[in-house]
Amino acid sequence: MKTQLYNYLLFLSIGLLFGACSKEKIEIPESNNPVFKVEGTMNGESFSLVAGDNDAYMHTMTQNSNGVNVFTGIIDNGDLSFELGVYDGYLDVLSSNSAAQLLNVTPIYSKRQLTPLANLSKDMFDNSANISQIDWYVNDAFMGVNNVEIIEPGNYNVCAMISFMDGSSKTLCNEMILGYQRSANCSINSLISSNGFLTASIDATGGTVTNVEWIVDGVQLTAGMNVQQYIPINSSLLEAIVHFSNGVVRTKRVLVNALNIGNNVEDFTEAETSIGSVINRDFNVRLKVNKGGIQYESESADNSSSSIVLTNYQYYGKNASGNNVYKVSAEIIANVKEVNGTNVVPVSFQAEFGIEIQ
Image (cartoon, rainbow, N blue to C red; front, side, top):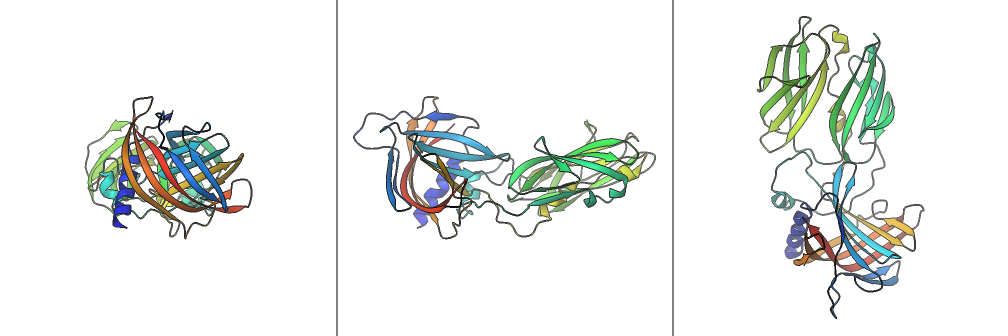
């Protein structure tokens, strides 16, 4: 069992190196022994897919799900396909030893989120009485007015286009990590006087701050744990790039207005922690099946008793783009649900998957 887990972790650590946009067919050499294949049963019916036979191919790629990489392999013959993907994780750690982190991860199937991970509201701001309307945008897509919910896990750029009662307007954008582990977090505490004297500091949670870079309207201020400085008295964007001792870097933004303190806008990313207990999606696995044009996925089914065992991996060679490919052996037991229906069926198979590494 330890060997299986170790090999699984090695597979995942390899997955973190995939290219961002590639999708390559792997050339299968002439051989009497199948190289890439999936063989097993789906809803009790046997199936076999062998790359190189009957128009079946092995594909490798890195997909994207709400701003998060999903390291993926697909074997497909046009009528039947199996896709196995692993979500990236620890999104706030910019530089880290992924293999060492994965030693502490227990692999599980990802599950589709049904309840909101964040509730964004005009009323969440202390100065909501001075705000006439907020238009919310998530990853550049308009989501609604005043009140919106974000359900799916992801790494989001959330923008609030704020219209104030005095007729002025401002936009405040912040990164929000939802449904994934936050290795450290923080918020800005700020106070500005009518003559433009700014006092600001960082309130950190879950980590030790080593340095803060302060920026006002794109102009770098002195770096340090806090800032006390005169700034232009008009409405300004205050940014703090916060560095933690564990490698986490978070950027937080607020609006400060010396002429009208009622138009100050605090950091709304407190909504990251406003929801209760959530099973984080870091390095979770998802399975997709397409059979005869009907699409199935594991995330909408109950897989609490399902299993994934990676029994071996080995270097295979290079694909047509010159990128390294590894062969991964897996034993899969899962349930998958029709994407556009209610039917849930069990799948059980052994797989030899190809994984591209750039």
